[in-house]
Length: 511
Figure 1 (cartoon, one colour):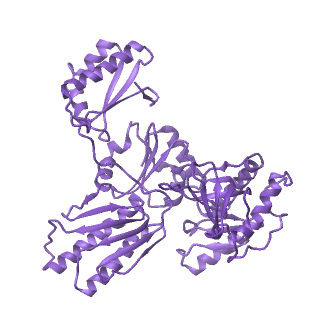
Figure 2 (cartoon, rainbow, N blue to C red):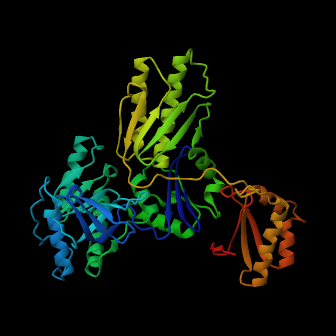
Figure 3 (cartoon, rainbow, N blue to C red):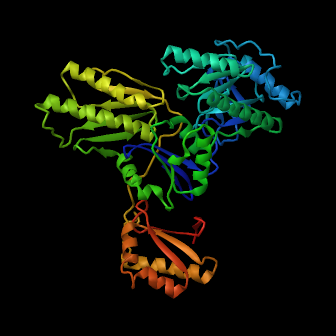
């Protein structure tokens, strides 16, 4: 589900109507994972075997020696020649690769202060830290990942059929350009020759675009952005099990259809719905509110308490009033509750994109077999999570630890609201004056004369009050009084005494 708003695009992935992933893309977002910058080395840190690189962000980005990549010497030489106008083509066929750098080497022997190097964002800025970088540039496609300055072909470990692995390796080896390595992604399994070839050609075009941009760039500057988040998410998760992609923006829908068509996927699954807020209409906001609070309740009566710190997350499992007919005793009830909560925790880690160290305090169980089954179940539930993770066995105190890759800040959604009467100030404002305040804004827009058609978005309870009565509604009286086209719509994503005006093109009107 792709919900286009005035602030950007929200993307929700649902399985059997249950929310399992949430992504938000702001307009003109920078320093996203995959973006490539021409950076300038600001400071060498010998004790960390790393350096700080200026990529234009408020905080210098961090680049460790191990993230330079084995072929950094070739990349560095290529970049210098490119900036000096010595290269006429992006083709690496005639470029002589240099030996790999020493994996146990020192960064001061490879780069120096003031060096201009291409870098790629590996982790987005988090908290007070700048982006984390890599100089092992890769370009990701639907089926393949292009790795310049390499001649290696690697295959995803999730492709287990030996015959298929052999087919893919031989095929990609025969079509890849010289000095361009390739990683074959899991989605490439059973892909046709034409699909793989087209994907590879698209990646080579992106490499050529990077080549042209670096030629005219001055550090620090972004030289190649990752494809928009909507397409990148579809690229990574789309499969034959998708039944529909709901969108509320015709342009976004057209872009998605074109993207699907590029790799022969049915574009008929794109469903356009002319709605101001798709998430509101499909009850997604309710699921977001239920899943992002400090306390997450399960239908059975069990609940989770989730606390966040800078370095780790702590989850406490509580049985609440959960009782099942099949749970004959306290031990069995604890086991069933823990398994149910383990499934929910696996969903929440993916949904909230919680990374780093996660400590889970399950309900105590004495049965060793139950403890093992719980660990096995949690690992099974985590299999759908594409982020690198590791589930450790329960400690002697019964705490299960999970390490999960963190590449961007944990997704935060405010699930609490200010008191609608006092706005958190402790002083009460009469709610009877609220409609007069809105009417005053409508009157101002009418007198200003620049907005003849306006959309007013309010809380569902306020919308019901303004629109009640077909002939004598407040909305209709305002239309007649101020001679303007006024539509009042409800959104459960805003507070009770909150309202917003939008123009005919969807732009918000600031009063």
